[in-house]
Image (tube, rainbow, N blue to C red; front, side, top):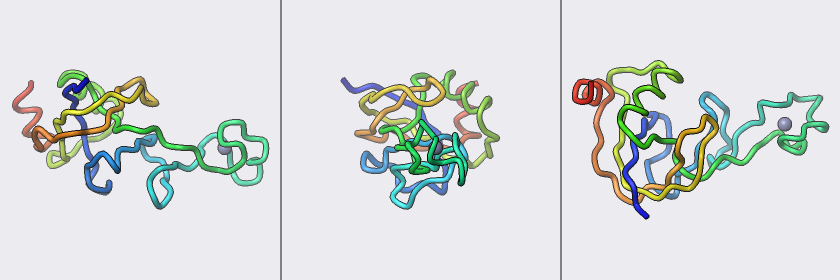
Length: 127
Ligand SMILES: [Zn+2]
């Protein structure tokens, strides 16, 4: 089933597409292909005992972009988790829900971009 989702797409992310739809914790270090994120539960030296990453130092990212179901939810979510710039990119897209993210938000793989706008434009229109 296709649903509509709302997402903020960081400028330093790979192109917005189904193939790149992997999500990681905010601010975490990603592996080169973007499908894994550095384990934050252990540190070099104590790594062997880590039950989160099994001592590899890397955790698999979750499949699907971290996104929200409604405009209100996205605005509340971003205010809580990030400092937004006026020109930050907001993407409204159709996609398939794949699960639930680290913060309880939706995860979805996009099938079609409905529109791209900026954060300031998005806020002006929706608040
Ligand atoms: Zn670990």
